[in-house]
Image (cartoon, rainbow, N blue to C red; front, side):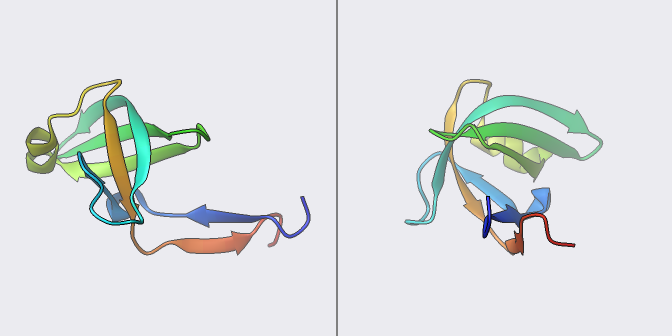
Length: 88
């Protein structure tokens, strides 16, 4: 797809909430969550597109959100890097 672009966001730059924090909030569905030391990785699929998103939360953030597989959340992306697909 000529001119196609792809966006990358580091997992620690992905914020999750139960309610949209802004107009930029993307609806997503929690697929699974697993702990790794003091962090919890939450795997999601964006609604309607099934694009995978991974968020990295502290255990406190994760327990405050109380998310489980199948839950709908809103994703806010920070420090997004956009690249021309196929470039490089």
